[in-house]
Amino acid sequence: MDLFQLILSIGSTVAIPIIVYVYYRLVRRITGKKDDDIRGKLDKLSTLIKKTEIQTRKKTIVDEKKDNFLSVPNVSFHFANKPQISDFYNDYFKEPTIANLVSEISGEKKDELKGNLPQILEAKTGSKNLTKWISTVKLPDLSISSMFLRYQRETIKSGQVQLGLEEVEIELSQLHSFDRAITSIQKRYEFKIDDGLIKSHHIYLKEKAAERTLQKLEQASGWILVEGKFIISNEGEFYKCSYSHPINEYLSNQIIPISISVLIPIKDIEPHIAGNYRQSIGRMIPMNIYGKVWQPIDRENSIWDLQLTPLAIY
Image (cartoon, rainbow, N blue to C red; front, side):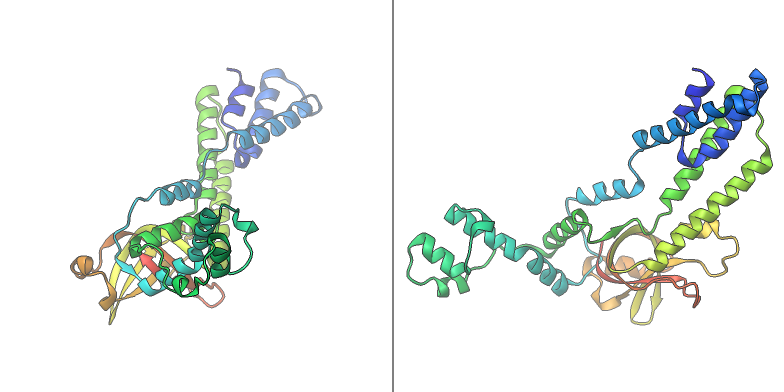
């Protein structure tokens, strides 16, 4: 494999400037050619690296999270707002379910059905008056956990809940790709790249990671689904569960850590796990939280805790 192919094999969008710089230095040293002689090769190299990056991009962490959440077979709640879950489920699914039922009875497609449910069934079945019967129709009973799982799956599929807010995946993957590129080039060609250049690019990538992630945390709104290890603390009549965001590792001047937290009424903890919570004060416990943003972080007002109101914790 020649140098050109090696660079393409490890190419990453974030590494393009440094790779092009290294390639330029090597070509000059090996061939003795001047800038004008290799400019065409550099342009071709940049174009091919970008194209290769697009073609070979792997699933992001968010994609993996989506796949994992969609394949969850069941849940054991720590906390569940059961009336709200039931309401959300019925609002989201009842009408399509009844439309499917009528479609099966009448043999027509859902979008071809016109009229209310009693009128449709009366017309299709020849019955005189089904209003009283319709008022007693009940869909099959489902457990709250089944309702929640289906609701979670559908809102994930439709993009109505945000995933990955607890991650800094995009920028960190760029940093790792940069390091792999440098290591591969130095090892294969025994080419020493200036430490100052590498360090300055590290600083740039970390600052970029921090800033872009901070913006996401500031702009967070609506429903989000987070997973991680939360520290449990006692706040009077509530348990507070706090997740220390990994972005803190890249903010050297950050005095107060950035976190994601939720408050749970102690009385509403599921009985089967209440004792575990009492014994886990100060410990980090793995949790998945489906909740709505109450307060995003606000750098201008020194608010560093993104607060959620939970629909379910499991």
